[in-house]
Image: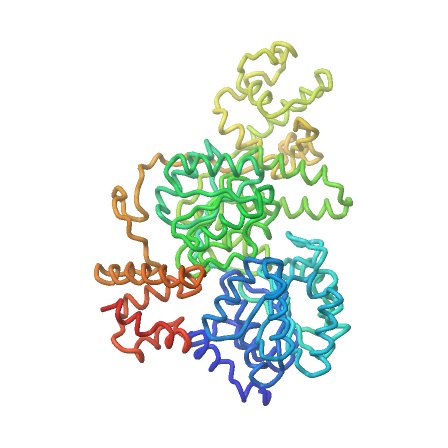
Length: 622
């Protein structure tokens, strides 16, 4: 271990500043490597403690006289929360962004240039601005430029799910400041994205740390769409009454309509998308971060940099673009390690819409081919009959065993031999083409298979086809499931503005009976009543659920601690979790410490917070 890490042991910083007794996973190895001036690429799941991997080296190097660490962060909200949390922990940190006045920005710059600042958060476009580069040049010459931490590093990759062109200019950090260590961090990156990050950020010599992508506290569930709004409401009321959650929708219109509908049903729901006024977006985001039980209905414009630890569920009403997006978005649930759920409703229209968006994009054919492959992997996850978690982790190259906690493990889906039904469906599409070369959509196809007379059937004379009514024995929902699975398997393609259906080359083998198709049996969600989470009884209590099991007295202490924390957070203009996370409050309530020494033993209580709040907490606990 270097002289630097001996002077300021990372474990001491972890315990003294952040109040955690031990490192998790690869954290200690990463921290020691960066403290010793090594470059690193860190892949660690959301909630795995990525921020500590650069915050502790920044503190250690500052204490050793190395100056300020620069943190590249893409979002203002993330900067505010991270800086607020660091200042609460007694670490001198600041940010530079458009929310500051000229006078405030000048003060931050003076703190940075003096070497007093431990960490400075800024967006990539500010860091590569000529004026800011000149300031960093001066710090570098004086030996006061300590570390570069590049958060959300997948943004530099064209293969990533959230590419941002301003990240590309960050390659100059290596060229301009070769002796300053760099740590790039992301929660999601497949092999292509990892290679892109290494090349574009000039991290060829960096040590790569890949943590397990498993989030064992998250339960994954995917259901077939059947009145998806009502399915969503039933999911929230049955499982997550009074919990904070995020609902993702594909379009701005759907976001606003869904939020309004949930609110009309008595939930505290807010919309968020890029088309809303900036002040409205900020107000809604602040409410989500600072209030309990808020459901944010949003497009993917919302999420990156949201550090709220007690999000108990993430729901998707539309299919994401790929597994990386799905993993990143669902990973915003349960950052505190307590149980959380990732729920998605998925249907035929989702498959068609995602394929159309890829086909109609202006990207090159190679890129489109890659995106189709990523979508196919997500469709395979959605249609899987085996463990969701095994499939998800396998995508990121990680072997695992069935988890026993996803929907497929808990309630194994029934399968049926859909070979004959698939051949009937494919034959019907083939007959359409033979009968005048016409193509039709899913609704008309299913009408013909089930023998339903409509104006369109009569117009085209499709009641005379040999496939007329050959599928009358199966309900419409099951035919939709067959078609959806044939599209996801690549045997049917949906094309054009009206998403008409055609046979893929692989359909020939199915029609000839050379391929057996075992398909999922469509499931119908049970019609449950309005229940409190896990109780089996009607919801009657306004108490917030603690992240660990508490007895009656401890639950009362937990509620009182949350009320106290809310007042402190309001005084400091910070989200409540920046003061203390729910997990820490629940441990206080359970352990019921009587002295400051006992309180100091609870995970999450650092020295600065003990000094600032210790006596108040003990009074609340009395």
